[in-house]
Image (cartoon, rainbow over all chains, first blue to last red; front, top):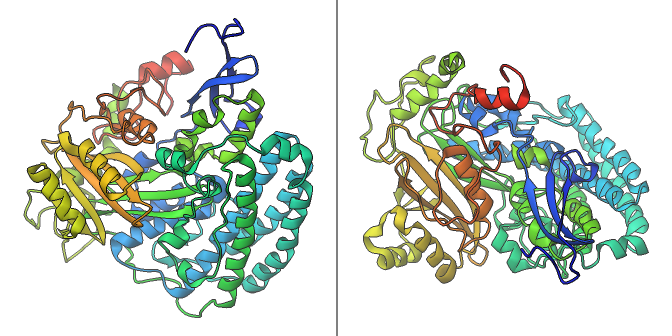
Length: 370
Length: 217
């Protein structure tokens, strides 16, 4: 990088974070600026590193289950689902149909809750103060269902290896459907506030473009990849937990910019509602726990299982040595991998866009740092 | 120092369990899992090696033909295919898979520590192909201190992933553009995900110098 630019001004190094409200946690970004133009960035991460993968090696398979909720804590249920599926794969068991349906309902509710948190804070970062109150109002309703189901709102530990621990409560199905009926018009309400808002459009259109090929190069998945026009969603590509039974669309964008990523996530919330409705209506009776022994002891071997978390591909690579504790658990975190593309997305843009781009990547630092 | 000794306690079971069954050469031995498996009766002992079956497909044949004895194994376990190759060939195999077989998305790079094995680490690359909707893992076994070639020139996403492997296991990737720690502090001593690193072990000196406290435990 040259010392002086064509304006003959020197490069300015600006530190952003780790205590900065728009970095959504403890991300530190070192920006190299030429006036308002960003020349390059460097991310400093690890402030929330708790050694989750090390802890896994010192716990039994079941004991490690609640820890995964602490990675992407705004989508704890997705984390738990991925881990349970990975261990179930190694044990060669499958959760019974009823458990799978409940899992899908809760996971999709959690996707909505996660997207709502993203929308509220993203809009707040950009200067729209109203949406965050609306988003948290509706998110609250989803969290109430989690609380009624398992007692916790955020780090839920909702699933167990092999199925579910708790049967659904009285009126669970009704409340889920009521949530759907209540929520769908709200998405239109958010869109009314934002989609054609001149400031919103001006701040997002053409900002932070990351093309489909670049996404693949950087391993970027989730809504960011779909906004670049790649129709790829693990729920369709490699269905798990019975997603193949549900009828839903994968929304995609064309321009691969921050605005399209906004539209993709809005549509994903609508599609989640569709999935929840179908799952509730078709929820079968039956057991909720598969044939898993008291002591979970997968045979020697390894497996990689991944799911479509709200942020992208969340994978677990589990190695068993035949004992009751995992020999190794590797978490493939979508936020960590997606964040790597930040440099490419902001370079050449304006410093104010950095805030918009961090928001649109929808990272959770608990998952980046693990 | 005192702390290090304390940390030996909780760290013991996985180390003992792990060392007993490094994957390839061991025949199924009934005495395979001491330590960790102690507490309860488990009559049918699982075999001490992974019950993988040979993977035979057009792709596996192509790769074997192209790379010959660089490929030591093409297997499948639980329906997941993997290739075991010599560490020198890993990047070439991944590049071949990307260019010739559409495996254009590097999902993850990670490592597994087997301290009792001569080739101490597994380095694992997980690949996915959008066109085929298929995954494959490329695994290599390397000794402590061996520097595998970085795969960043083939897949940019490997940059941070390899940095994390370096951070956690101390495996340095040769030719990596920016081989620094990523999650742990840069001056930290030790590699936390190695099996001989205790779960409550810490870099006492770093903690005292930077946090101004005696111990972070």
